[in-house]
Length: 216
Ligand SMILES: Nc1ncnc2c1ncn2[C@@H]1O[C@H](COP(=O)(O)OP(=O)(O)OP(=O)(O)O)[C@@H](O)[C@H]1O
Ligand SMILES: [Mg+2]
Image (cartoon, rainbow, N blue to C red):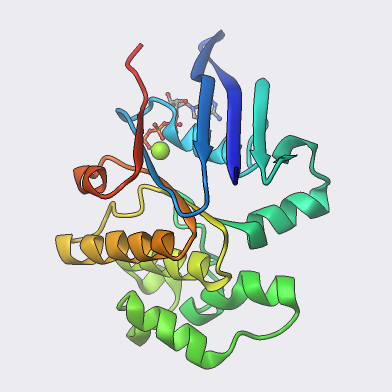
């Protein structure tokens, strides 16, 4: 099993009282599976994604990647997990605003492999996402949907085993949204696992499983 989440629980405190956006969650993802997570705004989708990517630590439970508990990883191993094994497209843009679009796309690869990324590879990725004209621009000069596509390009560069994407089609017009769906579907067909949180009903038609946060 590529990813196995067992009895995952996370609480926050609001107005002095604890509440549990993530409570006893179990979820598995195998290589090549396309999984969506849905539920109303504020139900805990991003919190769950932050836990599965090791950005948050849980109150209880396990997130195992290839059999290794993410919360037992050393700092170095966790960095490699986040930057090489998986890619996390966060709900915010997650871009460095002092770097160009090109350098934002290349950054994680450059840090991890200590080498620059072949220019053709960046061009090819940018073309597949329709952002090739923006490579010399800076994040503050982009629209919301363009920013999202830059974040997706960066995530795809390292060919991760698992892509975790938080509302990847929000801010996108129908055509660009369809393109992202198709890119993710093709990645799954090639063996990558993809987990998205989304309000976009189009995912239901193509995902293997849909997890729905129940109202409570
Ligand atoms: N660090 C935090 N401290 C306290 N409460 C938090 C914290 N982070 C998130 N929350 C709360 O936890 C709940 C779940 O938040 P989360 O971001 O996971 O929701 P979501 O399902 O992703 O919503 P959306 O669809 O709007 O993105 C919300 O009520 C939010 O206000
Ligand atoms: Mg969210």
